[in-house]
Length: 396
Image 1 (cartoon, rainbow, N blue to C red):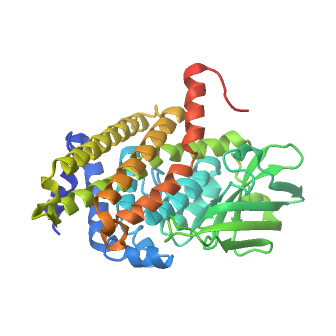
Image 2: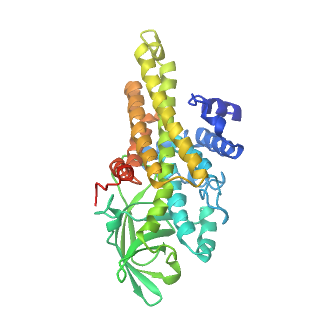
């Protein structure tokens, strides 16, 4: 497919001419990733998703596309504008949520933790090899008993001479079994403050196992991680990660990206439903010729366009350095909720064929459930925005 054909495909869901607001740099990133998704991801990904296998050949292509490293400047990182970051994640998730999540964990969480909380020496030591995927990163915050209540983490860090000793259990750690560098958040036993550490694997006491039985984001692995007396040298403590607020800042930086991720999944669902309705013949004519089908497609498009406008505005705010945590949270809440509705409608419009991987919809329908949950559930985003607009906290 030529660049012009990709352009036509891209504009098929752009009813409000949103693309006219892209800069040349943003459009180039968008088209490069769209081409990669259409020509390399979509033909292969269904088989990997079905078997819950990692598509390493696709992971290895990400540095070649120069999209690893988000908006980090230098160190071989992509150095994209926030708007370009959003467009890249949208397109990766239009292809496959596992691929986008792999990059989100590696670059958006692990690399950003080092970039935002590390010293210059630490950034120089780790970020260049992460930008090329010679080193893979993970981010270990969530614990079995502390999902939304992440500030209550129980993993401990005890100072022992020129080392720290980490003990605890983490859960749902993306890339946890394949990572070379794991950013672990733990509570200092002396001060009670939350600190960040880079654990270089393999190392004694670090044990990670793949969580099985997962029916969402199947082509990326999450892990249960046990830390038993893991010794981390002092030089691996992130020097600017001294309280939970530092960890929360890293998370807030990725929350707006989740809104773009959801837009990618919803775009895939709408596009598949439209193609199917135009091609599928029932009662002697295309499904798209029936009034109720047209009504459903228009409602899906209206929802999708609203999601696009949310993303464009948070992209503009991020580019200007004005995106607040709660605005990003509202966008994430709205877009994941809306994407679920679009994908449920798309799956239904495809009838029985909607549950076949060859039509892609069911994969996105399952994957959006993870994005709806991670980086703060809809309930938590609602309460955070509620606190912002009322000044009253509805939770401890």
